[in-house]
Length: 138
Image (cartoon, rainbow, N blue to C red; front, top):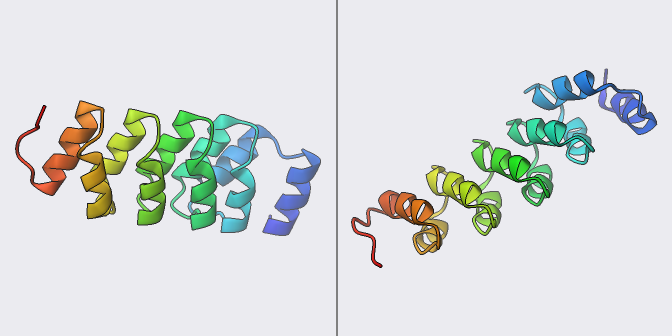
């Protein structure tokens, strides 16, 4: 099914859960379909979409602001997201999201410096380790 057919069936509500899950998790799903799935009512669909390495920057930004922490964590773990998306997520209220940002090899030095002062000790430690700062200050 092409993107246009998917869009029509999705708009009509005729795509079942399993079809949407398969599309969201398939690395060959086109960016247009993934952009639609970023707004799916089912959190698991959005999480699978957030994990897909083929998501566009715009879709990653939408999903980085999702109400579900599981979706935001999936974006943070996605190896294809940009440093800009990681920077946006570095301010997330969930410390696990910030931990994944601190772990990412794509996280900028500027963001790591900010995370090295994080209120959560695990985030702070990971960021400082990545920056080569040996000791935590109290």
